[in-house]
Amino acid sequence: MDGRFLRGLAVLLSCWTSLATAQQALAPVEARVPFAPAVFVGSDGLTHLAYELHVTSIYGDTGALMPQGLDVYADDGRTPLASFSAADLAGMSRPAPAGHAPVAIADGKRVVFYVWLTLPAGKAAPRVLRHRMPFATAKHATALLDGVRVPLDTAAPTVIGPPLRGGSWLAHEGPGNAHSHHWGSLVAVNGQLTIPQRYALDLVGVDARGHAMRAGVKDIGKTRHADWIGYGADVLAVADGVVRDMRDGEVEHSPLSPQPEPESLTAHGLFGNYVVLEIGPGVYASYAHLQRGSVKVHAGEHVRRGQLLGRLGQSGSSAAPHLHFQLSTAATFEGSEGLPFAFDRFDLLGPETEAQLFGQGEPWVASPARHREAQLPLNDVVIGFPAPR
Image: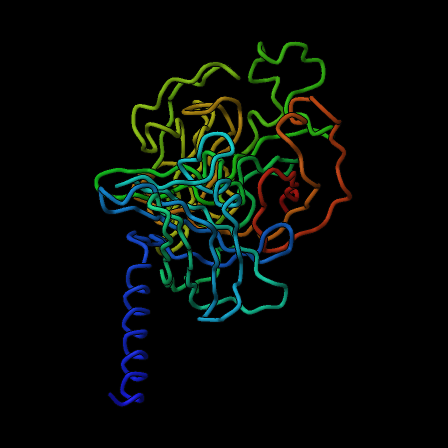
């Protein structure tokens, strides 16, 4: 037999084997990004993207799939825009693995990875993201997810005014914290799975020491509302708009008292006394946990930026006085997606921990005020809003 024929046959068999191996190596998962991310500038001065990658193991006999890492590429580039190790993935997944265990996706189960990207300074925002995730399988093989192309939302974040009249505020449970009760809370209602609080802030009033309670409080477990710095503060319209929903008359809980389970994953079940403004097409500003009897507007009313809406309180699902603020895509809480935004101006006074908020650990010391414009406060930084002009 001709040697050239044998060599050709060997090459052909090698190609078939490679193709079969490549086909077998494709990961048996469904993966998607349900809501397109949009770039925004954080209070660190850098440009970020925040989104969720849902990965589901489909078949019942696959065994656990163990992600070995994640590379994210921009615009089909060959160099990853960002790379995450298996240990990184354990810290950015829900449900989170117990202890320091690696992530394992069991048969028929889903894991959500909360992806936070920081773009290199001066680099243009990508148009499309692509994802590459290798897996180790329970059968001691490897599999690869390569694709999940995600076009970015090119709309610029909505720039808004302050929701509070002056003062200093801890932006608690804010963007960048995948384990916060805001970004980390998936809401499943009537066939939809969304994250209404993706960029939400809990604004907690603080004094010059960074404390949430006034000097002289001896037992933080027995405080009154009046002991809290922010309680009763004026809550303002961040832009011209129309009141699409509101509620008043709900009781306020005692600070730091046990919270009842919400009756539903809706504004009525969570927000207590609240106001929802439509400030643009498909853009809604929600203000939650307002003081009982303080709401000054009614549904259908047109409001102007800076107009008084109510006062900061502790109604609804709230452990202490604060203002919950968010932008989202619908007037309802359920079925809406959280949108990034930017305050037109504020002062950045540095990071603060929750322990320091209550006067524990190392004393908080404010940094020299750094003026910020058109930025979104990130998780656990203290900011100051300017006094109204």
